[in-house]
Image (tube, rainbow, N blue to C red):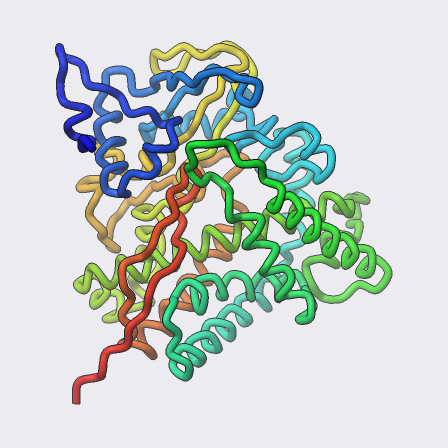
Length: 425
């Protein structure tokens, strides 16, 4: 098979642009995709249109691809024109799915989004956040205790997935008896998101998993309305002074977002982070030399370099011209965060992993605007606590290369083997 470089070799002064809508592109090695986006950013018109064949299942004719940092940021901060509704994922959720499960925060715009985000933000009180920070430290210590005792052979299952899952369950107040079932449902619901396949696959198992998960948390919400406790579910379903609270369906949609998005993105960032620190021993040594000084920059650089969420998309609400490119009402636009985070005009030596990089205006948590990731602070605290414990208490843990899932949505790590070197006397 021809390499990407061969397929994009100059032919009559033009380069063949890769088809970002073709599943085969997302099955290429990660390094080849990084190279492809580097080529696309250098085009005279990088906001190019990706043609897609129309059919009953795909009525759209294609999408505009935004690959430069400036374009991704500008579109992110202009939600009046670049709307998240009817769906920020590809493909967007069907109407019947939205009617059944409700709209997630990522798929709605103002004023609905503003109201939902206000309710959720008010639930994160200083008291809840203070307790969560202490809990994060305890969870990280407990996980590393188990690593030292059990010496697991897969880092993703034993560590990277467990950290955000336990933290979110504790934060929400999920009973221990419900957690194994929820984890199984999360794995089913997230298993097919964005996976590159040549044929359409109906997401029946994923939808059933979401229904089960949302039904369970809706039941908990009804119970907490009657008997509130000191947890996030109680805060979300209890009306505040303005009389606003989440309905059962809204609570289910928010919980699904936390579980599928919050757990998956943080687990992937943790797995990629350990891989990066292992492959760059100088950066690992620098971080260990003064963790408090370098940890914030290290977490930001891990997210920039790995970009756990590859892309989200927007729909044009009106005709619009941006940076010399014309968009029409109804057009679909895909914001490729993975490309924006390697933009040479913003990040010198973008392929270099440098925990001292400053400034570091990456878009790993979104490009700004109302959809900036609500869980940013929580994710960074989880990563800091876990890496402090891992690097100081388990220095002989040596991960193997991560096994990636070919996905156009997230930079997902399926597994990562662990080895344990014998400490030198």
